[in-house]
Image 1 (cartoon, rainbow, N blue to C red):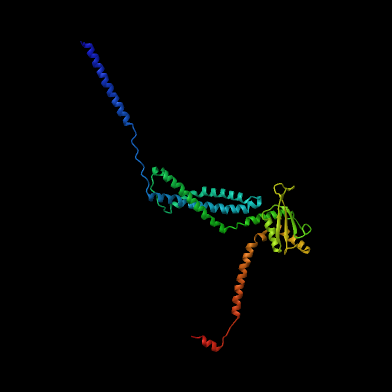
Image 2 (tube, rainbow, N blue to C red; image 1 turned 180 degrees about the horizontal axis):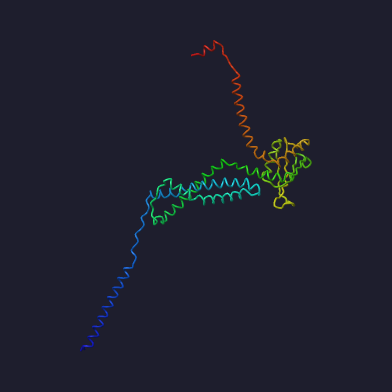
Length: 321
């Protein structure tokens, strides 16, 4: 038999179960209320948006590349012609310093360039921040900016047409020649070989020395048969080695006459101390050729003005229609 106490205990247990189920349902509903909503997928950009985005990224980089190349070339050339000559800097070191100047100019005037390109009225892409984070848009950004910089740097090479690239080399050669004009020794000998003349040149190792010497030999009508060049240590200056060059030359297939050896050695010695002429021989020859052509045309015009031909009256009548 079920007593009154047992009935009350069952009633209490049933109420407890109902309360537990109710609390569990409330906690489940609360947890579901805190769940994040599903993210909507980012719409892909259209072709027009991608094209406008590429234009806005590439065109400004063309300007930056052109400006960077222009400043670097002119600054590097100026440094090479001034500090490079004074302190003996190499052309590569001058170019590196020119790049430092170019980077500084870009940092100073970068904001001005940005404002300038904004005023050009470039099309706006209309991409959202979520679309800019897409992989294809990121790749397009890298490609557009890279192509823009490369195109600008290539356009900047036009500045080389307005820069005398040989001027720094000539100044450096002159600087070295001033300090080492008495350090060269030249020996022209017909006693070494019976079929040719040996010319021995000893002096500092300077750029363009061999070109200057061979140009001097060509001016004397000598043919260069052999060249034996080597570097030797300099006891007075370890940073500048010495050259010991032996040139074997002929003139019309034979030795150079003894009476011409002194003049040839003197010309070679002058070439080592004044290399401007040999270095610019090709340019001067081109200028002389153009000048000769102008003179010939002028002479022809003058000659035509000095000549007058009068045909006979009968022949003149026959020529008339």
